[in-house]
Image (cartoon, rainbow, N blue to C red; front, side, top):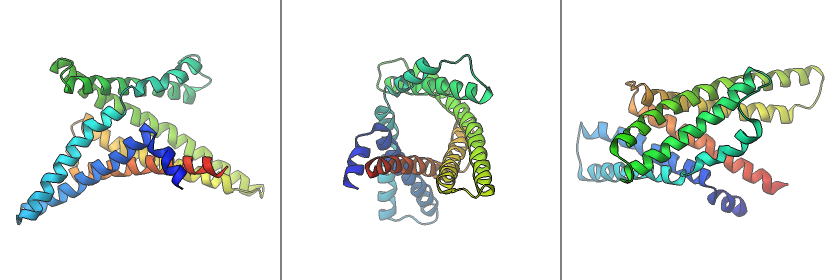
Length: 230
């Protein structure tokens, strides 16, 4: 387990997801705490609220810094698969999603440099607004593709049962697709609330952040654990 934790800790994606869980967990507690402060204020609650506010505010740019340059991660897939021709609509959506996800990370990088004063505020504002919109679109694509994958894995389990074959691996694959679907639904709610400026309750949006980050971190940990089990 120590080797697993060591490997996970040096992965920028795992650090980002761990920070995401902490960031949005702090926001959930902060929202509940602010509601209590409207009824009765104490010095301890005010102090805790202040620390939580600073924590979740600091983690937002910190996560962008951790993901800096992540847009280049997609280059091997783009060079290998391209965008056209695609065998079917599902593959086309997958290729399109890769390119859009790269654009989203690029916009996040631009927004980060803008927040540090290296770019004009107008450029920063443009990047932040469009990063939210592009993320919302990618979450929609993620949900569509994962729903198909989940359905296919469910059908595969049914067919295996009809043939009296072992379904352990198929059931595990279906479970992984299910929790991935939960993550993307949480992302969709959070991204949609931000991009469309919806009046979604703040604690609901924060819980979606905790759910998404938690599922992502769990999958990273599981992958690292299975690697060291071989």
